[in-house]
Image (cartoon, rainbow, N blue to C red; front, top):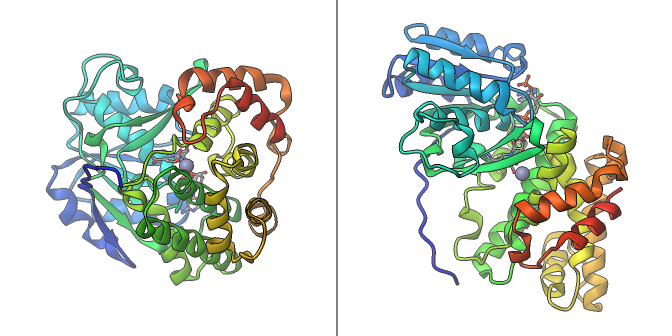
Length: 388
Ligand code: NZQ
Ligand code: ZN
């Protein structure tokens, strides 16, 4: 088992109706609030009005229109300006992972004198940040329990995972009823994203029985509960369990003591959504089984065997490579048949024209030579081509 140093300072407040505690929680941070949200889903579900009513004694400024794959310009830059001009005390992010990720970049950018991109690109490091509280409305990224935010800069085709411990949310409100309205497409994409967060930690050199059991159980829970959510979007218990599996996703709790995998599927997908602005979870569903096939070899096969037997219940009385291949096929089938996710890059508007360019971008920027199964530019071209 590897050494680790772990601390999650985020308070989770979970359950039906917990948002009523918002005024008390927010008052600890100050009166001037920047309320951030996306394209309007929080208005449709009545959450915007509810928040405004609960915070009627606060001074509210707003940043709306934060898009999926949140953009540096305008969203991050606009939010930083609002915070600086108005001396904002606390950011309240209400929405999915994109809203929260954007708010994290705003939080440190607002306390930094230079160009906020210096922080996102790790040219400089923040010394302080504006505290963040969030109400998460989509089960997927786990941003509500981690210090990461993924920001896109359109003109350079960059999509950077920006991690700074200052950006752990102070408090995250998780009320599964706010996820009842999430569309079938986003529910499925959220499941694929969260499954991949677990796989990125599961497929590594050194793991423990404790972590393996935790992750295998979470994968089964995610798959089973997502199917229930798709059947009945207002199934509270299923939405609730799905939400928690997602919340734990990127916080490292699933894999304390494991060696690093390098998060290869995320590195590849971030290039896809940077170049083509596709839905993150769909990109991952397409890439994951192709990556699995690509790396299957003597070194990796036992891990796939364990995954196949413990997650998909594949008969263990077979040749290792047969079991591993069946496990990979079962993963593909779950995404395609059960979640109804488009499983080819061409289905989401990506053709072969920029594959070499994307592979080069990933190879130069993502450090995948250090991954559990090292990936070089040629490997990336193969995986992307296989995914067409
Ligand atoms: O913009 P609005 O109108 O709010 O609609 C959103 C958006 O169109 C909608 N939505 C959200 N909650 C809803 C809802 N629709 C109906 N009812 C609700 N309750 O869903 C759409 C997608 O929202 P988005 O926030 O983009 O989705 P998600 O939470 O999947 O976030 C994706 C982003 O997170 C990044 C991804 O790369 C991507 O940019 N990631 C962040 C991570 C992190 N911080 O730890 C890790 C992940 O691996 C991921 O990379
Ligand atoms: Zn993800």
